Image (cartoon, rainbow, N blue to C red; front, side, top):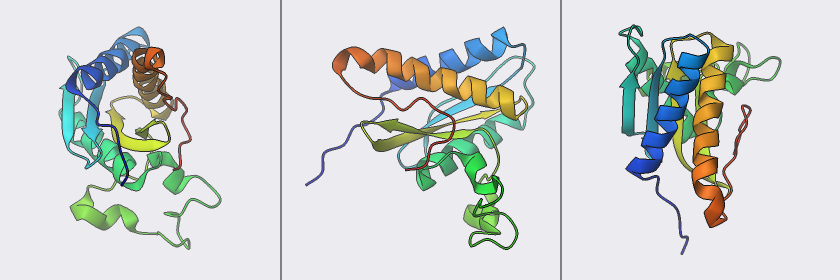
Length: 159
């Protein structure tokens, strides 16, 4: 039997708040989605003046990161990104009725080496989305560090 952790609402809210605070600090209107291990939203927020398409894109990125256990930009990172033309997963972004996101802005949430969810950002460029995603992961790290839990805080995650 395997035991596992579940992301709680208070933790997801803290992650979303950290992502949106970082977005405000770097002057970008972001949408952020925190999903559970099944890819379903726990928190989905859109900043004032953020694009109306942002929440769905953020959810798609978080869904993909949680479900495939890797940062979404790694699918198209040259030269061996599996979703690049000629590679084994070319066309994967057409999966799940187009919900599969193969571009920057989605990160799995990894606690004690287990993927327990995902965070997705939409609204900035790739660098801005990454900064906000890392802020969200850092917030969870800060929340759980006293309990001895290890949260992976990096951009290139592949589990």
